Image 1 (cartoon, one colour):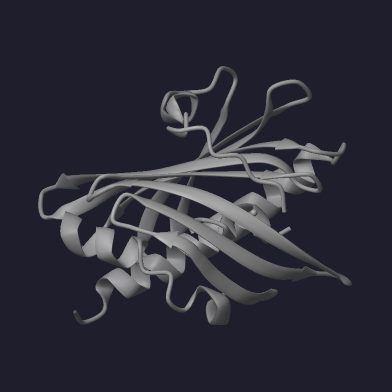
Image 2: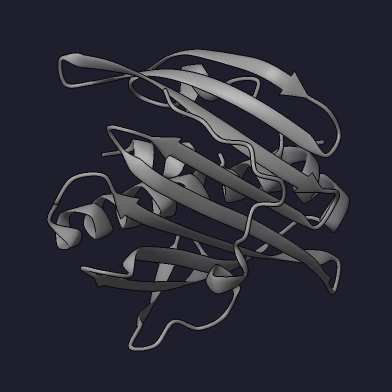
Length: 195
C-alpha cells in the first residue's frame, strides 16, 4: 500500500497526453474530512475524501523551514528513492529534463513485483505534477505546489486514485495518511539539516 504516495513524489501501461490535469486537486473537495496533526514539531493540515465514483483523495499542507529554492531542490532529488522506500528495488529515468521526467520504479508488494511508470511535469521552483496509468493499480495523479512565505515554503501535496479494482477506501486512506505523514516528517528533517 505504501506505493500510493511513493510514487510521491515522489508506472506497466503508460499514456502521454500532454499536460497533466491536477486542477481538481488544488481546490477544496466537497464533503472532505480535515484534521490537524503534529508531525514532529510542525503542524500539518490533512484532508481526505473517498467515494465509489469519484475516487480517493488525500492531501497535506505544511510549512517547510527552508526557502523556496532549497525546498524545490530537496523535493526533486530522487537519487536515494530506492534505498529510502521499502519495497522499491530499482529506479530508472527514461526521460529526465528540467520540466519533464519519465520514471520507472520496480516495487515488490507482498509476493509480486510491479513496474510502475510515472510521467512527471515540473514547473521549477513551484509545481510538480505526476500521473500513473497502470492496469493493476488504476489511475493515480498527484501534485506538489510550493510558495515562498516569510523565508520558508508553504507546501501543498494532494493525490487522487481511481483504483483498477474494488478496494476498501478506508484502507487506502489509512495507508495514504501513514505514508504521506511519514514522508512529510522525513522531508521536514531534511529541510532542517545543513545545506
